[in-house]
Structure formats: C-alpha cells, structure tokens
Length: 459
Image (cartoon, rainbow, N blue to C red; front, side):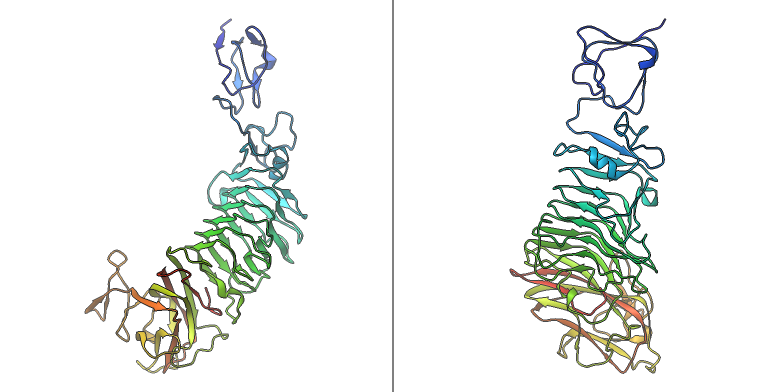
C-alpha cells in the first residue's frame, strides 16, 4: 500500500498526539480538525485530509470562524476552521482568550440577531472581530429589540468590516454599541442607524469615562434623512467625558435630534478630521455647535462641509448684512472655501438678476463673495469669487472655471480670519428650494485655533 510520510518539526501548527517514536494515523483518524501537532515523524497509511487547517508555525493567538449558515455553537471540534465554524459572534467571544490577540473571522453572508441587553459581550481583552467579504456580502448583525446592545466591557476590542443594522425594532433601539472600556475600535463598517420607520437613539454610546482611546474610523453611518426616526446621535458622549478620542474619515448621514456627534463638554485630546456629515434636522440648537473640530488645536489642518438648505422653513432666509452664520471661527486661521450647488436653487420671487446671495464676515458688509444670481445656480455649478452671476461648472483636473465663457478664475477662496465668523445674506430674492454646499478647509495659525460649522446649519 502506498504510504505518504510527512516530517514536521515541533514548530509546525497542527496539533495531534505526542509520542516517543513515529506516529501512525489509522483510517478513522485521517480527517483532522482544529489545531493538531506532530512532534515526531508522522506516517499516514493513506491519503490524509486536513479540513480547513493551515500548516505553518505555531501561533500565539487563536483564530475562530463564525457562520450562521453552517455553524454550531459547540467547542468540540468547532470554531477553529472555516469548514466547522461557530454559529454566532456572541458565542465565539465566550471562547476567545484574553490578551493573546485572538481573531474572530465572520464569514460572508453571516446573519445574527441581538435581542436583549448585552446580548453580545466583548468578553476578553485584545480580541478583534473581522468580517470577510465586501459590501452587502459582509456579515450582518441585527438589533431586534429596544434593549438590545453589544457591550464592550474589555479593553482593546475591535469590530471591523461588518454591516451593523440597528433598525430591526419598530419602536427604536436605545443604544447599539455600549462602550465601557478603553481602546475600542470601530473600523470600515456600515452602521445602519435609521430607515423611514425606525432607528437607534444612540448608535455608539460612549457616555462612559472608561471609553478612553476610542477610535471611530472610515465607517458609513447610514441614516434616513427625510424624517425623524428617533435618532438622537450617531456617536454620543455624556457629561462624564473619556479622553483621547479620534473620529476620522467617516460618512455620517441622518436626521439627528441632538447632533451627529453629540458632546456636552470638551473632551481632552479630541481629534476629529475628514468626516462628511449631513444632518437633515436644521432647527436652531446649541448641541451641535462644538463639532466638527478638535477641541485644542495641535496645528494640523481640518475640514468639514456645511449645507445651506433653502427648502427648510426653520431658516430665517432674510437679513442684511451677513447675519446667518455658516462657519464659526476661533482664533487665527487660514480658511479655504469652495461653494458648490448641491441641488438647483429655485427663487420664484426674484425677477431676472435681482436675487443675489452674498457670503462674508458675519455682521459686516465686506463680502468674500460679492454675490451670485440665485436663479442661475444649477446643480453641479461652482461659485467664482468677485463677479455676480459667475456660477460655473469647473474643471475637476485644473480646478479652474470660466465665468460667462470668458473669465478664468480659481473656484477656491482662501483668506485669513482672526476670530471672525462667516455668514451669508440674501438681497432681492427669497429662494424656496435648493442646497448650496460649502466645503471648508482650515489651517490653525496659532494655538487653540479652529473652525467649525455654526449651530443651526445642516452639516
């Protein structure tokens, strides 16, 4: 009979039996699951099948697999290969080892429901839950009860590349992920926070002083912006503040009753950068006035967008000079603004060229933009500084645009502002629909300087 001989050293991954001489596997032993090791020469009497095993050096950490379609929540020969996975993330977390760097891989098309408080618990320090797959093919966790939560109660826990659907309970979920330990990382996930019928009050509840070193990066907080679905905030900080918080590269969309990122006090060592935030709730309030910016400037640049939505009845659309703030400036900053028409502005009250919009220093008459004709603002157009009516489609490559087909100018307006806010005013027009988006970059030129979107605007 043909024999296959494999000589493995003590450093090889597979763990089986230890003996003083050669090890021989009978036929019933030929299928091997999990971690086995051969510390001596192993002889296979026939073809040996390694089910999902990886041959390599011994690992310090353990890798687990989760799949609701084929898995079972049983420790016996389950969990450590993708062919015999666990059925739920919640169960896999109970098997993970603390401070070993264990990883739980969630296979594509996995689906799991959380229907009670602390239904999933991080459980062990230093564990990562990572979804495999792309887009809607990624594993999904569904919140299906008001009290359903994923509790993070151990340090240095990471959730990455999953779809987190928090809209599964019609009356609304109270808090999606409850962060009560330092070093939590949420990365590259789609967090569905609301639809037209229901939503989560607080998607990430970081209202604990224990939530230090929080990192929220490159996620899509996907909310329904048309009406309120009971969403207070995507990320919420309470009166007891954590320290060392970074919120970067996220897209946050929704109708927020408090604020997209809600803070009631300053956070020590807080950094927020390159987030795209759209808030359809435009009633004037102070809660969102402290974002987006870093609390104490470290000299690095920041950016944000501000939408002026003329369809909202909450806006007072009249006034002169520039009394409607869109950018709140603290200290000395170099600011660059690009004003782009997100959707065409309709101004039925203006006749011909009479309806103009101006942008300038709040409360002053020295305008940055002298004005542009409201009825000429169509979707995709860009304002050009200094010439009323000069709203043009600009060249994406050269960043140049032509006003009235003859003038070439940069669509970017750069200026120095020393503690002076920026606002807008209307003259001779009353627009009733359309959105103008101001894309703002700022560079602090002194300690403690920053710029942010003013309260009451649509971020």
